[in-house]
Amino acid sequence: MPSRKRVFIALITITILALGVLLVGGWLLYFNPTNIVNRVVLAVIGSLVLLALAVASIGVIVLVVSLWSHRSFPLLQNMMSTAANILFPVAVVVGKILRIDKEVIESSFIAVNNQLVDTRDIKVRSDQVMILAPHCLQDTKCQYKITIDIENCRRCGGCPVHDLHELKDKYGIRFVVATGGTLARRFVKEYRPRAIVAIACERDLSSGVQDVNPLPVIGVLNIRPEGPCFNTKVNLDQVETAVKHFIEKQSPAFRGAEHITEF
Image (cartoon, rainbow, N blue to C red; front, top):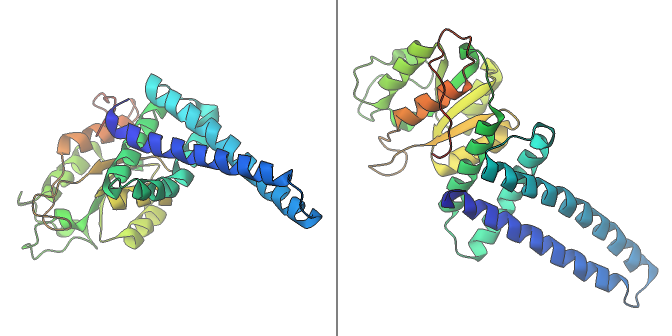
């Protein structure tokens, strides 16, 4: 398992261990002399913690096995995704306590998510795949705004939007540009894709993956040579590989998908 994924796995493992310590502490309090009300409260809380611990533990164990073996476990897929998404906010808190940069945790979460999607080997028609890109990919000097209508792009080649248009035409997929999470969710609701290739920073990708769960999303981190949200770039090879991963073999646009193990 590449080191980038290990950060998130380590943090959610620490979270589960902390839940276990909490459960043991509650168990010890339960058997100490106390009144009946306290015992009932402790019993209810302990039962809920035990249930959460059991589900999270199974989910994380299967998740780790899936990441190590590059295998899918269809019957437990929802449990793995649920465990990862629910424990992510807790992992961020634990990471803050351990002084781990939030972007590192978010990047690790995206890497874990990408491999989980890869192992599921999801195939859909090309017109059911959507590239969701941030508006900061457009050259800030360009006067033709594309957040409402991407066809306003003049395809001059001055920014990655031109290249993403080329991918859209080549594979017959949908391509949209959003200014933020609200517009992105609107596009998802309006066009109802069955698979998404999302381009964004660590924060937006990690929140976006959770927002549209269980819809499969492969996240591609943008490149920020001039800082965040300003004339950003993207690795087009990674975007194309992600697109090809989703397109079914009988689709006219299929070009032989590659496995996505790391972004």
